[in-house]
Length: 268
Image 1: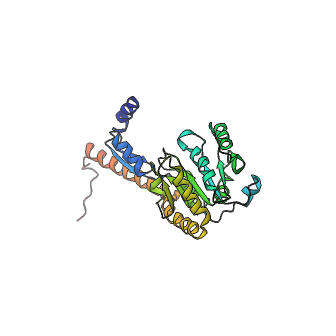
Image 2: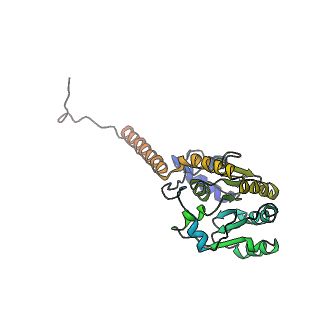
Image 3: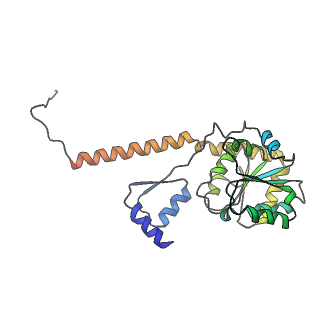
């Protein structure tokens, strides 16, 4: 709200350097009147943990997942994630493909989403895993064929990065930061928020065309590579080094050193 942004501007505009996780987050801050330097630095993920070598067999066994074409969402079950769209797409998908949806995560909307799956007559084809622990998470992504994110408030989307790092194609809403990660027709597809028909059509395409799915998954690996956590650490290190250098220069200007004639030495 306006009161909050007024207070944030008062604080942020006294800061020399601000970071945000994506270019779209940078633009939001600028649009809200933040006048200082805002630098986009990815939150980063560990590509040693999330990688295409992960296997999903243990997850399929743990949650009794049938060996069916699978699309997946991972994250909080909250309103801005628009998980209902993924459920509403499933009846359309199943007209062409004997597919299932895995919803991995917990949140306040679980009961509502369960009821929606029942109303759409796809409850038997939707798997709610509940909370996923850190050890299982990399393997969860490996258990799907396509990752989906219908969220409309993503400032970056760590889960999308993790899915890409596992070599998965992504279908995502054309909103906020998601198009920076999901390049339409390259490593997946974007769809306009609420366009269930297009979402379903893209799901059918990727769930049935293995060659295209694998090619897009390979492009996901290429696009996610710059988001390695080490690159994030290096970027912050450079940022701190630059800040320290500026402060030192400012201190030298404001407090010039006076030559101590008793201890001065000149070299010719």
